[in-house]
Length: 124
Image 1 (cartoon, rainbow, N blue to C red):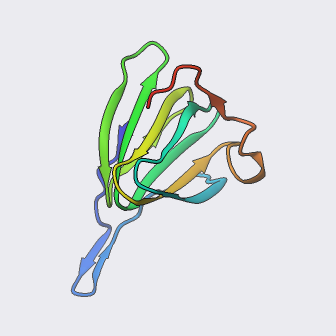
Image 2 (cartoon, one colour; image 1 turned 90 degrees about the vertical axis):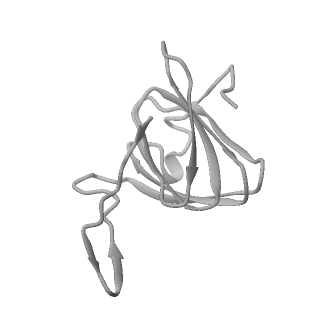
């Protein structure tokens, strides 16, 4: 799990412009909603990188590389985290939440299940 520190590209009296991603080939952009206590993912992708941006709410994110220890963070509005191939990951909403997921690789749209591998032992 790589937490990305976003830096505004431009700020003036009208507000702030922040680029979430630059120079990436994105195959899907997905909005995911969570009801409080909802758990999602508990899987990994062999070929897909995902960037997860919290629009609203608060979400616990647990990630683990195959031979590593689980890492847990609480993501809040404006937090941005990258999930790389072969990284086990799961999310639990601590309150009603929304997230945008930018996907690079085959896990998107009609190909949703083609690169999704469910975990036998869940992270959450």
